[in-house]
Image 1 (tube, rainbow, N blue to C red):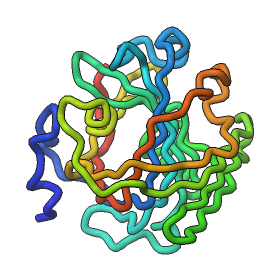
Image 2 (tube, rainbow, N blue to C red; image 1 turned 90 degrees about the horizontal axis):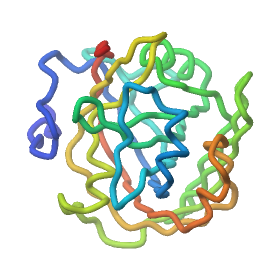
Image 3 (cartoon, rainbow, N blue to C red; image 1 turned 60 degrees about the vertical axis):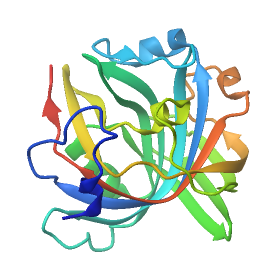
Length: 247
């Protein structure tokens, strides 16, 4: 049994009763969080979901990282495609009181991953030209979307950890932002939930230079003018389950 399944007290609801379907490892993750007006998000989120609020605001997060060792349950890692770059743009929602996330976009740099993930998860995956270069301890990350019919959004940043590793307190904003164990997505007119699991987040403070950011282009650019709340995680093993229709 994986040690991640020995740590479940952080979950707001029990683990799924069915077996997980996929495992992967996320590395060199930057979390960049901005408070935004819930009114700006409402038109871009399914009506069935409630926008989650903390410290008087909704939140939008940009998360660049690299995925490794992607494999299905009982199978070896995917040949050629187990490792890829990804950039997520998400916000925080609830459904019938259950906290989770809603993704505005998920950019990845390999077309088979984009195609397979869109089919398997019904999430808005997009193809982008992406590059990550590490000059220890700094991670240099660039993503330029090149997906037909989508805005050519750009993200370019350099980041690194800037503190020792710590576990966020349960009453903190960090805990509220990070300890989320499902996402919701629309498939046609139906709402689906995807469950994930990992152990508690062990993070550090982060320092980042954000050179370009046109992600979430549906939001006014002043939404990203303030300094973001920044965190870094070097490594996280994550398990996912098949989508479940909820409405």
